[in-house]
Image (cartoon, rainbow, N blue to C red):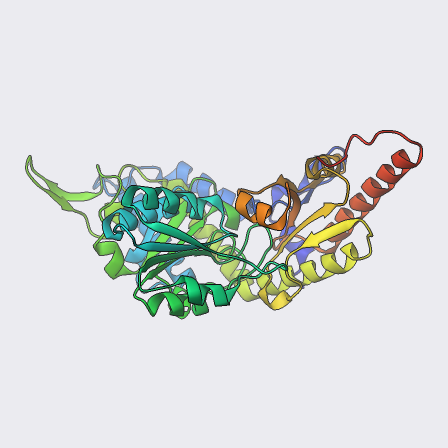
Length: 421
């Protein structure tokens, strides 16, 4: 496993105590913590280089522009893009997916065309396509999952037809941790000349992602889930597709020339980055990518799989804990969704918080998936490179305490305030 104790030294927030306990941060699928290297990079930018990019010939502007452009190059290398010009900075995965849906969908979809989604999609990779479908008169089709949380690939083969224009799918479920076989889905999409849009918000921070090897057309992900600041995200697309799209936003920095009668757009990626961009966020994202690269994405994935394997083993020892998702660790990332039978998921999360353990509870912006599983919500523990076996042990001890308290209250006839419902 990774040297967690050494890695934790880079994350100042992990020195915090919450409710008098050591902070056990297990909400990484929502957002990750930031290493001092990223914090210092952002601080240094503001202290030494703060200026607008592509706007001036003075030293600060030139230096800031160089940093900002370098960030595109570093991110492009990280996902093995064909060119740094294919990397567009956005506010996050949600904006990236909306840009794809509206820029590509409104231009290419016609009445009767089909968009194929899955029931495990995050709302951000579902709702924009549904709205575009309403506008264009297109049809949305959904691929179901197996009871253990894997996609039914045979349904993809039936759902994708000659009328399919877009296939939008998450690379890794933010609820079940299922890693989907994107190459297989991409092959099916391309067999009918459809484009494949991949939500990489959970995959890019945790597993190696190579856009060339996956043979995909668009990829969206967020910086804040991969050690970078909030407010910075990435839209990657194949150059030939990006060049034919009309940007949703336009204005300063996005054009080469404007007359009263015409507009000449700037080259990629700037035509999609109108206005003053999140320069400091891009600098932070660049430093985060460098940090992850030094540790190695294969190493991070392997580490998280070991944490999940240990978690599943420990949770199996608890009679009342029900875990969701596949047990096939080859297709599972560092996310564990569960419930304690008879207890409300929000109550479980709140009690864990009194022990210094941060988890997420609710439907995790994936309501259709929870309805498919017959659930009103789940508790989610999600791991990252600074989590260790001691964090898992703390979680299990917390669950044992909650179960013990619940059973004690029940045995003496006291109404349990934590009951499900």
